[in-house]
Amino acid sequence: MSTRLRRLTVLTLGTIGAAAITGCSTASSPADFAQAERIRQNLTPELDTLYQRPDDMSNAFTIMLDENGRMFWQDLGRVLYTDRPSRLAREPVPW
Image 1: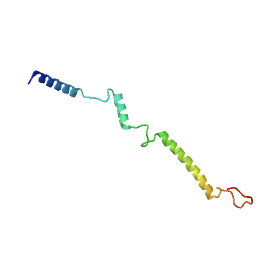
Image 2 (image 1 turned 45 degrees about the horizontal axis):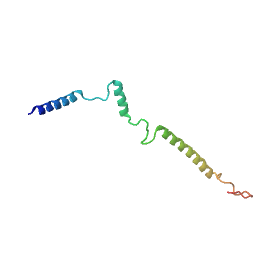
Image 3 (image 1 turned 90 degrees about the vertical axis):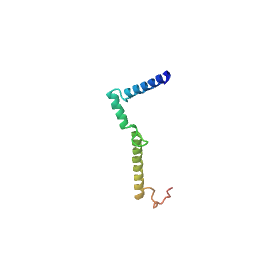
Image 4 (image 1 turned 90 degrees about the horizontal axis):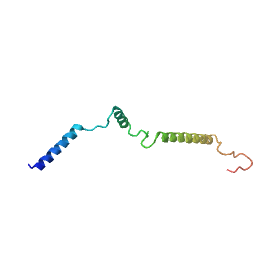
């Protein structure tokens, strides 16, 4: 075995050994570790559904309540026949 090959082998084994001994860590302090755990528990804290933030859900809920309320009163007007003027009036009513 030549000297050059021997040096390359020793250097390679030394590098592998140093890398194995040092290892790697995601956190250097307990606070960093706690933050990493919080991130892993909820990767998308700004989303409540697959694509909506809490504000988007609140807006959709408010719009739904408003539309349902207006549709309810419109349906009630149809049931009670108050959605158009009376046809019994003598004078013509543009409708």
